[in-house]
Length: 478
Image (cartoon, rainbow, N blue to C red):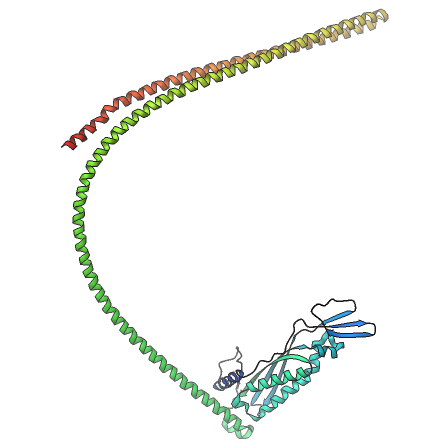
Protein backbone atom coordinates (compact mmCIF):
# COMPACT_ATOMS: atom_id res chain seq x y z
CA UNK A 1 0.00 0.00 0.00
CA UNK A 2 1.56 3.27 -1.13
CA UNK A 3 0.97 6.55 0.69
CA UNK A 4 0.07 9.80 -1.04
CA UNK A 5 0.11 13.15 0.73
CA UNK A 6 -1.73 16.34 -0.17
CA UNK A 7 -1.70 19.80 1.45
CA UNK A 8 -5.03 21.61 1.62
CA UNK A 9 -3.75 25.18 2.01
CA UNK A 10 0.06 25.34 1.85
CA UNK A 11 2.31 23.09 -0.22
CA UNK A 12 5.55 21.83 1.35
CA UNK A 13 8.54 22.71 -0.88
CA UNK A 14 10.25 19.36 -0.36
CA UNK A 15 7.29 17.24 -1.60
CA UNK A 16 6.77 15.76 -5.07
CA UNK A 17 4.30 17.32 -7.61
CA UNK A 18 0.71 17.52 -6.35
CA UNK A 19 -1.97 15.08 -7.29
CA UNK A 20 -5.25 16.32 -8.83
CA UNK A 21 -7.01 15.95 -5.47
CA UNK A 22 -4.36 18.01 -3.70
CA UNK A 23 -4.63 20.77 -6.33
CA UNK A 24 -8.39 20.85 -5.92
CA UNK A 25 -8.13 21.09 -2.14
CA UNK A 26 -5.52 23.88 -2.52
CA UNK A 27 -7.88 25.87 -4.77
CA UNK A 28 -10.65 25.58 -2.17
CA UNK A 29 -8.26 26.69 0.57
CA UNK A 30 -7.09 29.75 -1.44
CA UNK A 31 -10.65 30.88 -2.07
CA UNK A 32 -11.51 30.47 1.59
CA UNK A 33 -8.41 32.40 2.71
CA UNK A 34 -9.51 35.43 0.71
CA UNK A 35 -12.68 35.75 2.83
CA UNK A 36 -11.09 35.55 6.28
CA UNK A 37 -10.33 38.46 8.54
CA UNK A 38 -6.95 39.20 10.17
CA UNK A 39 -6.73 38.73 13.94
CA UNK A 40 -4.88 41.56 15.72
CA UNK A 41 -3.79 40.51 19.24
CA UNK A 42 -2.33 43.92 20.15
CA UNK A 43 1.23 42.92 21.11
CA UNK A 44 3.51 45.41 22.93
CA UNK A 45 7.26 44.79 22.62
CA UNK A 46 8.20 46.99 25.60
CA UNK A 47 5.57 45.82 28.07
CA UNK A 48 6.79 45.50 31.67
CA UNK A 49 5.18 45.15 35.08
CA UNK A 50 6.44 46.86 38.23
CA UNK A 51 6.09 45.64 41.84
CA UNK A 52 6.50 48.30 44.55
CA UNK A 53 7.06 46.97 48.11
CA UNK A 54 6.94 49.49 50.97
CA UNK A 55 6.75 47.59 54.22
CA UNK A 56 3.52 45.63 54.37
CA UNK A 57 2.12 47.51 51.35
CA UNK A 58 2.51 46.09 47.84
CA UNK A 59 1.43 47.65 44.56
CA UNK A 60 1.52 46.00 41.10
CA UNK A 61 1.09 48.14 37.95
CA UNK A 62 2.26 48.49 34.36
CA UNK A 63 5.54 50.37 33.89
CA UNK A 64 4.73 53.93 32.71
CA UNK A 65 6.68 55.58 29.82
CA UNK A 66 8.69 57.95 32.08
CA UNK A 67 9.59 55.60 34.92
CA UNK A 68 12.42 56.10 37.41
CA UNK A 69 13.37 52.95 39.28
CA UNK A 70 13.76 53.21 43.08
CA UNK A 71 15.21 50.78 45.58
CA UNK A 72 11.71 49.45 46.44
CA UNK A 73 10.83 48.78 42.77
CA UNK A 74 11.20 45.50 40.88
CA UNK A 75 10.37 45.39 37.17
CA UNK A 76 9.70 42.22 35.12
CA UNK A 77 9.46 42.21 31.30
CA UNK A 78 6.55 40.50 29.57
CA UNK A 79 8.14 39.37 26.29
CA UNK A 80 6.49 37.97 23.17
CA UNK A 81 7.13 34.23 22.83
CA UNK A 82 6.40 31.53 20.26
CA UNK A 83 4.78 28.17 21.04
CA UNK A 84 4.78 25.27 18.56
CA UNK A 85 2.22 22.53 19.02
CA UNK A 86 1.51 19.42 16.88
CA UNK A 87 -1.49 17.08 16.96
CA UNK A 88 -2.52 14.11 14.79
CA UNK A 89 -5.65 12.04 14.12
CA UNK A 90 -6.23 8.88 12.05
CA UNK A 91 -9.54 8.60 10.17
CA UNK A 92 -11.41 5.88 8.29
CA UNK A 93 -9.40 2.95 9.58
CA UNK A 94 -5.98 4.59 9.03
CA UNK A 95 -6.94 5.41 5.44
CA UNK A 96 -6.44 9.14 6.17
CA UNK A 97 -4.01 10.75 8.61
CA UNK A 98 -4.47 14.45 9.41
CA UNK A 99 -1.65 16.43 11.10
CA UNK A 100 -2.39 19.80 12.72
CA UNK A 101 0.72 22.00 13.02
CA UNK A 102 0.17 24.98 15.32
CA UNK A 103 2.36 28.06 15.79
CA UNK A 104 1.16 30.34 18.59
CA UNK A 105 2.73 33.72 19.29
CA UNK A 106 1.59 35.00 22.69
CA UNK A 107 2.23 37.63 25.34
CA UNK A 108 0.96 37.89 28.90
CA UNK A 109 -1.35 40.82 29.63
CA UNK A 110 -1.03 43.08 32.69
CA UNK A 111 -4.10 41.50 34.22
CA UNK A 112 -2.63 37.99 33.85
CA UNK A 113 0.68 39.16 35.35
CA UNK A 114 -1.11 40.76 38.30
CA UNK A 115 -3.00 37.53 38.91
CA UNK A 116 0.19 35.41 38.75
CA UNK A 117 2.82 37.49 40.57
CA UNK A 118 4.74 34.48 41.83
CA UNK A 119 5.36 33.27 38.20
CA UNK A 120 6.69 36.59 36.83
CA UNK A 121 10.35 35.44 36.35
CA UNK A 122 9.11 32.60 34.03
CA UNK A 123 5.74 33.94 32.96
CA UNK A 124 5.80 32.40 29.44
CA UNK A 125 6.60 28.90 30.72
CA UNK A 126 3.76 29.27 33.22
CA UNK A 127 1.36 30.19 30.39
CA UNK A 128 2.41 27.13 28.35
CA UNK A 129 1.96 24.81 31.32
CA UNK A 130 -1.45 26.23 32.27
CA UNK A 131 -2.95 26.58 28.78
CA UNK A 132 -1.60 23.41 27.11
CA UNK A 133 -4.68 21.38 28.08
CA UNK A 134 -7.05 24.03 26.74
CA UNK A 135 -5.22 24.20 23.39
CA UNK A 136 -5.19 20.39 23.05
CA UNK A 137 -8.89 20.21 23.84
CA UNK A 138 -9.75 22.80 21.15
CA UNK A 139 -7.63 21.05 18.51
CA UNK A 140 -8.95 17.55 19.38
CA UNK A 141 -12.57 18.72 19.14
CA UNK A 142 -12.03 20.11 15.65
CA UNK A 143 -10.07 17.06 14.50
CA UNK A 144 -12.83 14.68 15.68
CA UNK A 145 -15.34 16.60 13.56
CA UNK A 146 -13.38 15.62 10.43
CA UNK A 147 -14.79 12.08 10.62
CA UNK A 148 -18.03 13.29 8.96
CA UNK A 149 -16.19 13.84 5.66
CA UNK A 150 -17.60 17.30 4.82
CA UNK A 151 -14.11 18.72 4.59
CA UNK A 152 -13.39 16.60 1.50
CA UNK A 153 -15.69 18.84 -0.58
CA UNK A 154 -14.90 22.12 1.17
CA UNK A 155 -11.19 21.65 2.03
CA UNK A 156 -9.35 22.08 5.34
CA UNK A 157 -9.05 25.86 5.22
CA UNK A 158 -12.26 26.46 7.16
CA UNK A 159 -11.14 23.95 9.81
CA UNK A 160 -7.80 25.72 10.16
CA UNK A 161 -9.52 29.08 10.58
CA UNK A 162 -11.91 27.66 13.20
CA UNK A 163 -9.01 26.23 15.19
CA UNK A 164 -7.12 29.53 15.03
CA UNK A 165 -10.23 31.49 16.10
CA UNK A 166 -11.07 29.12 19.00
CA UNK A 167 -7.48 29.17 20.28
CA UNK A 168 -7.33 32.98 20.08
CA UNK A 169 -10.66 33.31 21.91
CA UNK A 170 -9.74 30.72 24.55
CA UNK A 171 -6.39 32.31 25.40
CA UNK A 172 -7.92 35.79 25.33
CA UNK A 173 -10.43 34.68 27.96
CA UNK A 174 -7.40 33.62 30.03
CA UNK A 175 -6.01 37.21 29.67
CA UNK A 176 -3.28 36.05 27.27
CA UNK A 177 -2.88 37.95 24.01
CA UNK A 178 -2.07 35.58 21.15
CA UNK A 179 -2.12 34.95 17.41
CA UNK A 180 -2.48 31.31 16.35
CA UNK A 181 -1.51 29.93 12.94
CA UNK A 182 -2.71 26.44 12.00
CA UNK A 183 -1.56 24.28 9.10
CA UNK A 184 -3.24 20.93 8.43
CA UNK A 185 -1.75 18.18 6.28
CA UNK A 186 -3.86 15.21 5.10
CA UNK A 187 -2.20 11.98 3.96
CA UNK A 188 -4.22 9.30 2.16
CA UNK A 189 -3.33 5.64 1.64
CA UNK A 190 -4.01 4.45 -1.89
CA UNK A 191 -5.97 1.14 -2.19
CA UNK A 192 -5.07 -0.61 -5.45
CA UNK A 193 -7.26 -3.70 -4.95
CA UNK A 194 -10.95 -2.75 -5.08
CA UNK A 195 -11.97 -6.19 -3.76
CA UNK A 196 -10.57 -5.30 -0.35
CA UNK A 197 -13.09 -2.51 0.14
CA UNK A 198 -15.81 -4.86 1.37
CA UNK A 199 -13.56 -6.51 3.96
CA UNK A 200 -11.27 -3.81 5.46
CA UNK A 201 -12.72 -0.42 4.48
CA UNK A 202 -15.93 0.64 6.18
CA UNK A 203 -16.14 4.14 4.60
CA UNK A 204 -16.39 3.34 0.89
CA UNK A 205 -18.52 6.46 0.27
CA UNK A 206 -15.60 8.63 1.40
CA UNK A 207 -13.22 6.73 -0.84
CA UNK A 208 -15.61 7.00 -3.83
CA UNK A 209 -16.04 10.69 -3.22
CA UNK A 210 -12.26 11.12 -3.25
CA UNK A 211 -11.99 9.08 -6.45
CA UNK A 212 -14.70 11.20 -8.05
CA UNK A 213 -12.98 14.44 -7.17
CA UNK A 214 -9.67 13.06 -8.33
CA UNK A 215 -11.20 12.02 -11.68
CA UNK A 216 -12.96 15.38 -12.17
CA UNK A 217 -9.77 17.28 -11.37
CA UNK A 218 -7.71 15.11 -13.72
CA UNK A 219 -10.30 15.51 -16.50
CA UNK A 220 -10.30 19.28 -16.06
CA UNK A 221 -6.53 19.33 -16.14
CA UNK A 222 -6.44 17.24 -19.34
CA UNK A 223 -8.92 19.58 -21.03
CA UNK A 224 -6.94 22.60 -19.95
CA UNK A 225 -3.71 21.03 -21.18
CA UNK A 226 -5.28 20.20 -24.58
CA UNK A 227 -6.66 23.71 -24.85
CA UNK A 228 -3.27 25.21 -24.07
CA UNK A 229 -1.58 22.92 -26.62
CA UNK A 230 -4.11 23.97 -29.29
CA UNK A 231 -3.58 27.63 -28.47
CA UNK A 232 0.18 27.18 -28.61
CA UNK A 233 0.01 25.36 -31.94
CA UNK A 234 -2.26 28.06 -33.37
CA UNK A 235 0.11 30.75 -32.14
CA UNK A 236 3.07 28.88 -33.64
CA UNK A 237 1.31 28.65 -37.05
CA UNK A 238 0.40 32.34 -36.89
CA UNK A 239 4.00 33.22 -36.08
CA UNK A 240 5.27 31.12 -38.99
CA UNK A 241 2.80 32.76 -41.40
CA UNK A 242 3.76 36.16 -40.08
CA UNK A 243 7.45 35.35 -40.57
CA UNK A 244 6.78 34.17 -44.15
CA UNK A 245 4.85 37.37 -44.97
CA UNK A 246 7.53 39.46 -43.33
CA UNK A 247 10.31 37.74 -45.31
CA UNK A 248 8.39 38.23 -48.59
CA UNK A 249 7.93 41.90 -47.81
CA UNK A 250 11.59 42.22 -46.91
CA UNK A 251 12.66 40.55 -50.18
CA UNK A 252 10.44 42.91 -52.18
CA UNK A 253 11.78 45.90 -50.33
CA UNK A 254 15.35 44.67 -50.87
CA UNK A 255 14.77 44.37 -54.65
CA UNK A 256 13.31 47.88 -54.79
CA UNK A 257 16.18 49.22 -52.68
CA UNK A 258 18.78 47.49 -54.91
CA UNK A 259 17.24 48.96 -58.09
CA UNK A 260 17.09 52.41 -56.51
CA UNK A 261 20.68 52.03 -55.28
CA UNK A 262 21.86 51.09 -58.80
CA UNK A 263 20.15 54.16 -60.29
CA UNK A 264 21.58 56.38 -57.57
CA UNK A 265 25.04 54.89 -58.13
CA UNK A 266 24.89 55.50 -61.87
CA UNK A 267 23.75 59.09 -61.35
CA UNK A 268 26.42 59.65 -58.72
CA UNK A 269 29.14 58.27 -60.99
CA UNK A 270 28.10 60.61 -63.81
CA UNK A 271 28.12 63.55 -61.44
CA UNK A 272 31.54 62.51 -60.12
CA UNK A 273 32.87 62.35 -63.70
CA UNK A 274 31.70 65.89 -64.41
CA UNK A 275 33.12 67.09 -61.11
CA UNK A 276 36.47 65.42 -61.85
CA UNK A 277 36.72 67.09 -65.27
CA UNK A 278 35.95 70.51 -63.85
CA UNK A 279 38.27 69.83 -60.90
CA UNK A 280 41.14 68.90 -63.26
CA UNK A 281 40.74 72.16 -65.16
CA UNK A 282 40.67 74.16 -61.93
CA UNK A 283 43.69 72.29 -60.56
CA UNK A 284 45.70 72.99 -63.72
CA UNK A 285 44.93 76.71 -63.51
CA UNK A 286 45.67 76.74 -59.79
CA UNK A 287 48.94 74.90 -60.38
CA UNK A 288 50.13 77.50 -62.89
CA UNK A 289 49.13 80.31 -60.53
CA UNK A 290 50.82 78.59 -57.62
CA UNK A 291 54.08 78.13 -59.56
CA UNK A 292 54.10 81.82 -60.49
CA UNK A 293 53.26 82.82 -56.93
CA UNK A 294 55.94 80.55 -55.44
CA UNK A 295 58.59 82.04 -57.73
CA UNK A 296 57.65 85.53 -56.60
CA UNK A 297 57.64 84.45 -52.97
CA UNK A 298 61.08 82.85 -53.31
CA UNK A 299 62.49 86.01 -54.82
CA UNK A 300 60.95 88.20 -52.11
CA UNK A 301 62.07 85.80 -49.36
CA UNK A 302 65.65 85.76 -50.66
CA UNK A 303 65.78 89.55 -50.77
CA UNK A 304 64.27 89.82 -47.29
CA UNK A 305 66.58 87.10 -45.96
CA UNK A 306 69.65 88.85 -47.33
CA UNK A 307 68.53 92.14 -45.83
CA UNK A 308 67.61 90.68 -42.46
CA UNK A 309 70.84 88.69 -42.36
CA UNK A 310 72.87 91.81 -42.98
CA UNK A 311 70.92 93.69 -40.28
CA UNK A 312 71.36 90.83 -37.87
CA UNK A 313 75.08 90.67 -38.52
CA UNK A 314 75.50 94.39 -37.93
CA UNK A 315 73.45 94.26 -34.76
CA UNK A 316 75.33 91.18 -33.63
CA UNK A 317 78.69 92.90 -34.15
CA UNK A 318 77.51 95.97 -32.26
CA UNK A 319 76.24 93.84 -29.37
CA UNK A 320 79.41 91.78 -29.33
CA UNK A 321 81.58 94.90 -29.21
CA UNK A 322 79.43 96.33 -26.45
CA UNK A 323 79.60 93.08 -24.50
CA UNK A 324 83.37 92.95 -24.99
CA UNK A 325 83.76 96.46 -23.64
CA UNK A 326 81.50 95.72 -20.70
CA UNK A 327 83.41 92.50 -20.00
CA UNK A 328 86.76 94.33 -20.10
CA UNK A 329 85.42 97.01 -17.78
CA UNK A 330 84.05 94.35 -15.45
CA UNK A 331 87.41 92.53 -15.47
CA UNK A 332 89.24 95.75 -14.69
CA UNK A 333 86.87 96.41 -11.82
CA UNK A 334 87.38 92.89 -10.53
CA UNK A 335 91.17 93.29 -10.78
CA UNK A 336 91.02 96.58 -8.90
CA UNK A 337 88.85 95.01 -6.22
CA UNK A 338 91.17 92.01 -5.95
CA UNK A 339 94.27 94.21 -5.76
CA UNK A 340 92.64 96.34 -3.10
CA UNK A 341 91.73 93.20 -1.15
CA UNK A 342 95.26 91.82 -1.48
CA UNK A 343 96.77 95.13 -0.43
CA UNK A 344 94.46 95.25 2.59
CA UNK A 345 95.30 91.68 3.45
CA UNK A 346 99.04 92.37 3.07
CA UNK A 347 98.74 95.43 5.27
CA UNK A 348 96.87 93.38 7.86
CA UNK A 349 99.54 90.67 7.78
CA UNK A 350 102.26 93.31 8.00
CA UNK A 351 100.56 94.92 10.98
CA UNK A 352 100.23 91.50 12.61
CA UNK A 353 103.90 90.83 11.92
CA UNK A 354 104.90 94.18 13.40
CA UNK A 355 102.78 93.62 16.49
CA UNK A 356 104.23 90.14 16.94
CA UNK A 357 107.77 91.52 16.59
CA UNK A 358 107.04 94.21 19.13
CA UNK A 359 105.54 91.61 21.45
CA UNK A 360 108.70 89.48 21.04
CA UNK A 361 110.91 92.46 21.84
CA UNK A 362 108.86 93.21 24.94
CA UNK A 363 109.03 89.55 26.00
CA UNK A 364 112.78 89.54 25.38
CA UNK A 365 113.27 92.65 27.46
CA UNK A 366 111.17 91.25 30.29
CA UNK A 367 113.03 87.96 30.11
CA UNK A 368 116.36 89.76 30.25
CA UNK A 369 115.18 91.77 33.24
CA UNK A 370 114.11 88.58 34.98
CA UNK A 371 117.47 86.96 34.17
CA UNK A 372 119.34 89.92 35.58
CA UNK A 373 117.20 89.72 38.65
CA UNK A 374 117.97 86.01 38.95
CA UNK A 375 121.67 86.70 38.48
CA UNK A 376 121.55 89.30 41.21
CA UNK A 377 119.74 86.87 43.44
CA UNK A 378 122.31 84.22 42.58
CA UNK A 379 125.15 86.58 43.43
CA UNK A 380 123.50 87.32 46.74
CA UNK A 381 122.99 83.61 47.28
CA UNK A 382 126.61 82.95 46.44
CA UNK A 383 127.64 85.32 49.13
CA UNK A 384 125.40 83.66 51.71
CA UNK A 385 125.49 79.96 50.73
CA UNK A 386 128.07 77.36 50.08
CA UNK A 387 129.87 76.48 46.90
CA UNK A 388 127.43 73.68 46.01
CA UNK A 389 124.36 75.87 46.15
CA UNK A 390 126.07 78.48 44.01
CA UNK A 391 126.82 75.86 41.39
CA UNK A 392 123.18 74.67 41.39
CA UNK A 393 121.90 78.22 40.90
CA UNK A 394 124.33 78.82 38.05
CA UNK A 395 123.19 75.61 36.35
CA UNK A 396 119.55 76.58 36.77
CA UNK A 397 120.25 80.03 35.36
CA UNK A 398 122.07 78.52 32.44
CA UNK A 399 119.18 76.14 31.66
CA UNK A 400 116.58 78.88 31.80
CA UNK A 401 118.70 81.11 29.62
CA UNK A 402 119.12 78.38 27.02
CA UNK A 403 115.39 77.56 27.05
CA UNK A 404 114.46 81.24 26.60
CA UNK A 405 116.88 81.67 23.71
CA UNK A 406 115.50 78.49 22.03
CA UNK A 407 111.94 79.76 22.48
CA UNK A 408 112.81 83.12 20.94
CA UNK A 409 114.50 81.45 17.98
CA UNK A 410 111.43 79.21 17.39
CA UNK A 411 109.11 82.22 17.39
CA UNK A 412 111.33 84.11 14.95
CA UNK A 413 111.47 81.10 12.63
CA UNK A 414 107.65 80.68 12.68
CA UNK A 415 107.15 84.36 11.87
CA UNK A 416 109.62 84.14 9.00
CA UNK A 417 107.90 81.00 7.63
CA UNK A 418 104.47 82.69 7.76
CA UNK A 419 105.80 85.78 6.02
CA UNK A 420 107.42 83.66 3.27
CA UNK A 421 104.14 81.70 2.82
CA UNK A 422 102.09 84.89 2.47
CA UNK A 423 104.55 86.33 -0.03
CA UNK A 424 104.44 83.08 -2.01
CA UNK A 425 100.60 83.05 -2.03
CA UNK A 426 100.51 86.69 -3.16
CA UNK A 427 102.96 86.02 -6.00
CA UNK A 428 100.99 82.90 -6.97
CA UNK A 429 97.73 84.88 -7.19
CA UNK A 430 99.43 87.55 -9.28
CA UNK A 431 100.74 84.85 -11.65
CA UNK A 432 97.17 83.41 -11.96
CA UNK A 433 95.72 86.85 -12.76
CA UNK A 434 98.40 87.48 -15.39
CA UNK A 435 97.84 84.03 -16.94
CA UNK A 436 94.04 84.58 -17.07
CA UNK A 437 94.51 87.97 -18.74
CA UNK A 438 96.77 86.41 -21.35
CA UNK A 439 94.22 83.63 -22.04
CA UNK A 440 91.37 86.15 -22.37
CA UNK A 441 93.40 88.25 -24.81
CA UNK A 442 94.19 85.16 -26.89
CA UNK A 443 90.48 84.17 -26.93
CA UNK A 444 89.43 87.66 -27.96
CA UNK A 445 91.97 87.59 -30.79
CA UNK A 446 90.62 84.22 -32.05
CA UNK A 447 87.07 85.53 -31.78
CA UNK A 448 87.80 88.65 -33.82
CA UNK A 449 89.52 86.52 -36.47
CA UNK A 450 86.45 84.21 -36.63
CA UNK A 451 84.10 87.19 -36.96
CA UNK A 452 86.17 88.58 -39.82
CA UNK A 453 86.15 85.17 -41.56
CA UNK A 454 82.35 84.94 -41.17
CA UNK A 455 81.84 88.44 -42.57
CA UNK A 456 84.11 87.67 -45.49
CA UNK A 457 82.28 84.40 -46.28
CA UNK A 458 78.84 86.10 -46.07
CA UNK A 459 80.05 88.93 -48.29
CA UNK A 460 81.22 86.35 -50.86
CA UNK A 461 77.82 84.55 -50.78
CA UNK A 462 75.68 87.61 -51.52
CA UNK A 463 76.25 87.65 -55.35
CA UNK A 464 75.48 83.93 -55.55
CA UNK A 465 72.09 84.53 -53.86
CA UNK A 466 71.07 87.35 -56.21
CA UNK A 467 71.79 85.29 -59.37
CA UNK A 468 68.70 82.94 -59.12
CA UNK A 469 66.48 85.97 -58.55
CA UNK A 470 67.44 87.35 -61.93
CA UNK A 471 66.64 84.01 -63.52
CA UNK A 472 63.14 84.01 -61.98
CA UNK A 473 62.59 87.54 -63.29
CA UNK A 474 63.62 86.30 -66.77
CA UNK A 475 61.08 83.49 -66.47
CA UNK A 476 58.39 85.97 -65.48
CA UNK A 477 59.23 88.11 -68.52
CA UNK A 478 58.95 85.06 -70.74
